[in-house]
Length: 145
Length: 142
Image (cartoon, rainbow over all chains, first blue to last red):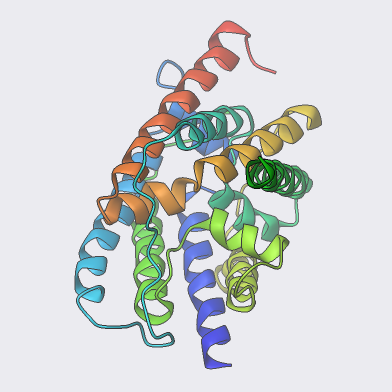
């Protein structure tokens, strides 16, 4: 119960950060990437400050043996710079550049009650399901071969 | 659609995102990556209960802020529906194969000094710049 409540509270802080910084607003995000247009550098400060806090905070937290509500830290173990990483990230950027929403911006934007974020999130979930289906089919084919 | 540079809001909001990322690691031992959290919930895969709570908290944020401060929360997505749908599909497929997005790779991954996350972030930042350039300055917008 405490674990679930704390996750909701952390989600609220995350969402507040996104909304206050303007990153739930596609116009603001796209204007960062439009250096030749009416450039809005806000995103740079958002990522910079988020990264700075996390960089220092992780150093302190990961010194401990375990998190409060779990027996271990769950950290990614993959190391390879492979085609899915680069190709997938490239595709993500194209989609971000078209619509101006990334996943972390779109989810809090849902709370605005506007139609745009809802349409985007529905399509994004469609893409996630499609890609996970493709990945599973690929793994199954490799197992059969 | 013009927007203005908001340095104070950017620094405050960014710091809150960082605080959330550090808190999720300190309390739950997890990366605050929206891609991983959302994927686990929509596939009911793994430990999705706390992740659903995180998503609901994030969705509630603009509602709570508007109720508390009365501030307006502009979401200017003035694009044709097909562009929003195309963008959403590409983002969904891309972050699944790329294994993360701006929060997971761009903030948490780089903070862990992960080479994969640095390569992913440089790649999607580059293609986003390129896409916005093509859409706005070659195609002349949607």
